[in-house]
Image (cartoon, rainbow, N blue to C red; front, side, top):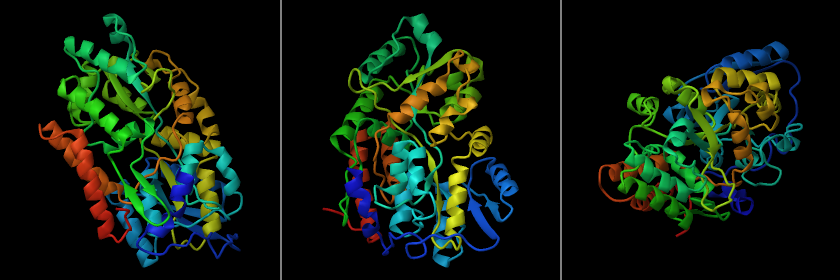
Length: 432
């Protein structure tokens, strides 16, 4: 669907972006030494840049850091692109790429050497995120991803004689039994709307489409409402907690056995290990519960790309750095060690660090589960061009539900209307 729908993202923005590769269809190396700038908020990324600089004396990269994307870096990028002084390369999360695309903030690097052929090196769904399904177009290199699985307290399930759920129906049944024991099966993350989007993604739903001329916005698709009604039931029955995600109280609830599962991304492995140290050896990881018995679909929560920003005077070299950053074994290993990134590169998942047994998880090779989940994420999920605003509006609605007002479905309906209004306010065409 996205190959047909997202191919004309460029037609739906405020400006008139070009879909042609840099330099009028060509992307040639620069004669002589090159200096590039690269902006990212990932911890330790400066050390990865140092590694490149050691190996490439004629193409030196200056590293810049700042707050994460939605906390200021994206706005800085847009201001810099407008002023003509943006970094050559910037970290951009998958859900923010359409915003850059419709505002003509990305260089098409498809013609920059072997970039197009490199698509085979990445997990398929991540490559579709950076190409928008367009022919002869690549707007970023996939960096990391957040395939989702179920962390669970193996010891508690075993002691209670409750089967580890493999379907959402079984998950709800387990939730009732766990509540009877005075605990919760999980916590509903009212402010993490991108987590909720990952649940819809797993269920085969979409929130956005683009027909080449206009955007369609519908956060209340049948698949989305099925997810909303499911979690609404757990909330109404008091079978999930509603703590602020990643807060001290949230960590304590995991550390004391009040939470028996967490449906989360691969990067969550270190979150539990850090926040719940007293539970070492008691956790395990299983695939996400399925909507249909025997299903294998996974969701995704998070992930970024490395984009060449509009106006770079050295597009070829910037593209080659971005490709190296996300395929070189040393670079990938260092980015994981210092920044906790789970590579979008297929070979990256084969690094030794991802083959080891994890003591905290009872000696399980948990990354085998996430590698399988990554291959089972449904391709071509479409993000809208104003996701920050969409997240905020839906989060406000979810918060009201926690406070006793309305339903999750109501919040999605209100989010749809507000997102449409936001698109119109930016002169982005919307289908009525």
